[in-house]
Amino acid sequence: MVARYVVSPRGGRRAHRDIASALRAAAARGRAALIEIAPGRYEEALTVRGEVRLVAAEGPGSVLVGRTRGAALDAFGTVQVHGLVLVGREADVVGCHTGTLTLEHTEIRAHGGVALHARPGTSVTLRDSVVAHGRTLFSGGAGLVERCRFTDAADNAVAVIDGARVSVRGSRIEGSRIHGVRVSDAQAEVLGCELTGTGNAALMADARAHLTVADCAITAVHAEGIMFTEQSRGSVDTTRVTDAQHGIAAANGADPLVRGCVLTDCRDTGINVQSGARGRFEDCEVLNARNVSVFSTKGGAPEVHGCRVAGGNVGIAVTEGARGHFTRVRIQDLANSALRVWNESGAVFEGVRVDRCTLGLDTKGDGGTTADLSDVVLRDFETAVTALGESRVTLKGVTAERGAVGFFAGEEARVLVQDSTVTAVSIGGAVAAGKGRLSARNLTVNGSEGTGLAGSESGYLDVANSEFTDCASAGVAFADQSSGRLVDCSVNGTGGAAVLHNSRVEFVSLRTTLPVVRRTIRTVDQPPTVVNQIGPVFHRDVHGAQFAWNNDHVTQNQQTEGDDSSR
Image 1 (cartoon, helix red, strand yellow):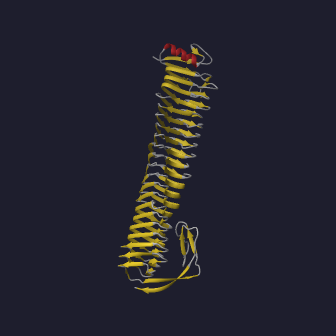
Image 2 (tube, one colour):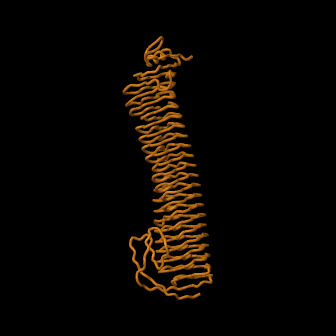
Image 3 (spheres, one colour):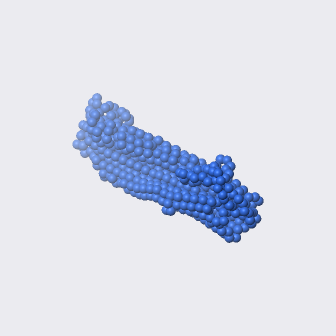
């Protein structure tokens, strides 16, 4: 049977004037105790032992317990607190040392330090309560937080460390100076929560932690919405991050599973994977990322499946020795590249759809820089594929529609094309310039306002079993010192030349009814020159121009043509 004790600062029949005296009386009897506390301010530091329930008799907020300095309550045993306001400074305001502690409809005000400390081996439940200013620390024990509010923590609002296991549900965390929830070498789940205004990552998992997140809303954070690092694992489901520096990030060997999330208006990146981290991202949306929507760098290796990217600057960027595998991604309305692979990185893109982006794919770097595209559709671009440096690009089953240039190999890059189509371009379907090399099998170019296939400078074209139809200027054109080989190709249409060449190309089974024209070159005055760091961009007709890609210095030489026509 539970023994009942009454506490009232005014005294009264069988009433204790302070809480400590009621606790002493309960301890002397050694029975479960209910202590009902009348409204008032109690300048006490409580030590509670055994099975005790402390209740504010006239409801939450009517009883304030604590001193100017030190702790308000230390629990040893099975302790329940209902409706109290616990205040402390420069100490653990509430500490659970052994056993279990349950706080309901309680407010903890920590003016520096730890608000609530659950020590190893304990179990603490915090329900329908408010924690102001201090940190809630679970160290090595178990915890449940339900429908609580954490405001203006000077540190982390909730810290789960050293093997603790904690569930945070339906709660709001705002204004934390560091993290909203930090999980370090421990396990936590955060479900249906709101987090806003944190100084660092709203949710942080480090030191091999396991973090599960679902149905949360994260807004206005100064760093990451959610961060996994130091070999942490876990999952994030149906969560929305808005106005973060980075939406969801993984680093230093972390490997999260992220599904059905929306990352919007991120100030730098939406998804950020680096430093040997991996991660799988499924059915997510990244909207209006200011810099890069999906970023893999410095050894990162994410898998991205079924995601959507819209608005912003760059869609997917893989740089600095990173990797990535991207399948069934839809990308649209970007100011820059939809796909980017730079600097010794490698990426695979399958089933990707790109609409209304300035560049479809751009690659740049040494020979270790590779991009493999299959079953990819690129529409409404300036250049569909641009390969520079010594990078290597493989295109299989790629469709490019409506733009200036389809496939471009410049500098010393290599582009391999198979079973692909370019339609409705204004300058060229496939181009090799500089010392670039483009090899194509079963390439089809339809409706180019310029050329279907073109080589310039020292570019090399090796093309077989391909078709060029209705190209206004020429089906195939070789200029400068460019060279190549055409095997079993056809050029069809009603106007223009089949081939304009410089005698440095080998023809094997060329099929056409249009003229094949050999061009002789002599130097005259300088022509206009277009310099572009990425690829050709024109806003009106340009005739007799030279083009330089990625050059800081350009030497101009005017050339004129003398035709030597033959069939």
